[in-house]
Image 1 (cartoon, each protein chain N blue to C red):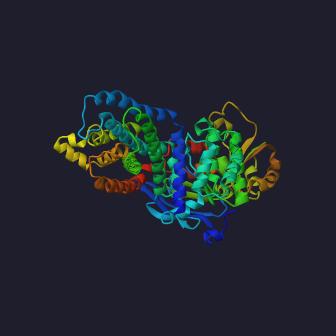
Image 2: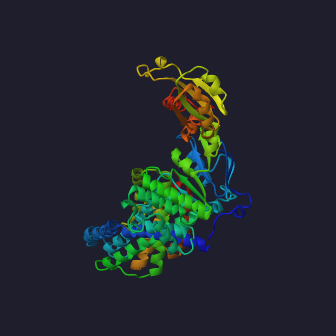
Image 3: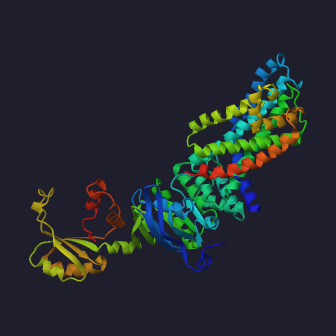
Length: 251
Length: 350
């Protein structure tokens, strides 16, 4: 068991080094939400009134943070295609390391990057909108669950797709509907009934709602439902990622 | 230091043992029953034309591919059922790069030292950096290293955890003469000092001849010849002596009486030789095949002396002759490979 975690730790370290060095990535990931919230959120803030009474800018800001975590996670799964192209995965596959520890290492590094981005952005966005670390534990669960399930989705897509271009197109096709029906842009309660039903089936909806609770203290869905739901999602995502990894790493 | 020994392999003394390995990809059979036995501490070379099944064999032995039929053991561990134990014994240097272009040489070695649970990680990483001559470049990302430096780093990653069996798929492909001989030296030292078993595939006959004490030639998914480089060369039928004598009278009888003569024939007259017609050479040419050229040449020359020896040349078969003789039979006769084979080895009929 200790070998399992030390192997995952070694993989984590490698992933973390790669993320840390990619300065352009951090700048892009930090500027995009700030521009989005600053240009659109603050403008609509004066026009839109939410049922919860919260400001639209803070609603959008929390939604964009969830979007950032999710799209980053899908992209994290995609690094498998890069690793495969470089040949790096082949060396990893002949090492006496379990698939699960490789997946855990990748997942942990990706999630840490997302968490760091969220905290940095909260610090800046709290100057523009009423964000604060209202419920840190729930925020952490939301980030981990959204990140893990998105990484799993990314790995599952990477296992089917060989090329970067096709990955970009197909992942957009899969994720855009998930993002639109998840309460990122407007509250689920304001959606027409059939769309609202779809939103309730979307696991991301629960992650977005809990993340919002963590930063604003308001939520649309019962916590007694979203918390166990997201815990289950973490476990399920891990299992799916490990299962898809074999196919994704082959070649 | 965990070196390999016969007792650690369960007393069998074989580092690699494969029986009836087959691999099919749908209709295509990449391997059609390969048997291999590599003793602990040996350096084993796998030769064969492109597409013969070398890489597939390495893939199965290194646990990356599952065989369709047959089985293989590495240090006594089944490569399918005891994958993890087998993986702990092996190190691989792949033909294509497996480096992460954004990690430095030191970071690569450090990562593998962690994954293989190498004791005293830092010291071992420094040791390998010195061995592969990348101390100065240790902090540079792999993408900035030269081709030879990258190759050395790959080999360093393969050696780091002191594997009991080291697989090398075309280890010196694309390296200059200096880098190549440095790597050969490392490999020899590795065998000498740690008893590491080495399994390599190569297209370089020089490499196979200089490093390996046992060779197998695969062609179309089967082992078509196996043995030490010396035995394989001997099996081709002996050494060729090209003689040019002043007088041809009674020469055939005299030469035929010398020890070790296997075959003997008089060269065609110069006038009848295509391309050589204009260049008349004095004397008469003979081709004599001896079973052991270096030892029997003196006696042959003694027998030929009364006829006046003008020229003599001894040609020993090389591994290239062996390779061309055994490999590529699956190709249609008349293609480029077949004609190259005929022109390269006409003197060595089996």
